[in-house]
Image (cartoon, rainbow, N blue to C red; front, side):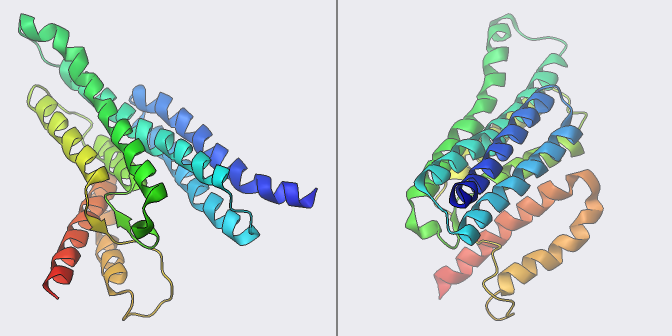
Length: 240
């Protein structure tokens, strides 16, 4: 009986991740980005502790791994798509005049937001079978991508078209590409607290502190800093 309860704990946390992600989707589509952020943070919390609890209790299982990926594609794949869909829809609607031949394409352009969910699923599938990602990442992690988009939406609430329709479409392409790109990105997991073995992580965290002064856009800035630092680190490693 106790063993069954122990096995159920990690999967329950994963399901709570999924449940929070579903609620976040509704608020994201409605443009309630502040509430969306709250439920995304709930999802991130449950996502962190489901794996931690599985390892601590010694009950890791293949079904838990698959369930985790399915939940993550909702919380960190579909949610950012819904955020971008909401932004694109609002931007498109603010255009006073659309050429006749583009009226039908307006909805299709908005649906391009779901490319993020598609590429998030590809990224999660690659992560499950890629042994290189045991201690670091290849491509942008889906939670980081989600935090970027929610912060972007909160920081720029008054997007005006038509220019920003184009900007958002370009950002969708870049975001989708970063998820599956063969770009090594460091993990924030500390094996120990030694400076010599964690210089990159400490540098990242130190620079992040003043970034919180940027307000709503701070998370987007932090994710961009993470990507930049990963790229610089890759260049330094390639020169050695």
